[in-house]
Length: 139
Image (cartoon, rainbow, N blue to C red):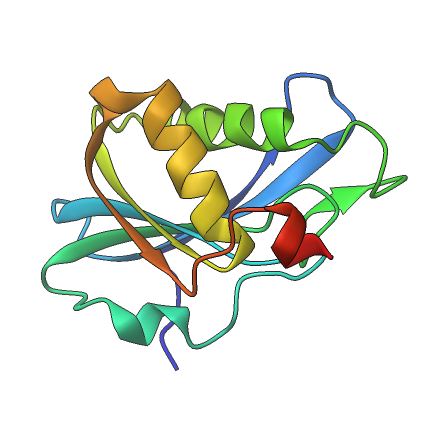
């Protein structure tokens, strides 16, 4: 198990949620953010093992209403558009100019949307276990 090099609770712009943010690996390494699946899940505890700590500065955060993030009502002000805003807020708060984005399941949808909206901030994107929210997938 890998211990984070730092953690913080980041209030969302609307003040209704606090996002649990953790960093792992080399502070000067290639920055990469991991976007977990869900909605409603959280960052799996074994995610840091996927990234070489000598190479990457891994950032994880639990989305609104998920995992170790805090709120009074997990469904209040919890939309896909706000989650994309949160990804960008985390990047800005950590002072990262550009980073890679990696997502699993619902996180892969967030990766695609974030990369489309903030392409100048993305060095590369990886989508794993892709879920794009199509009618066929949602059922």
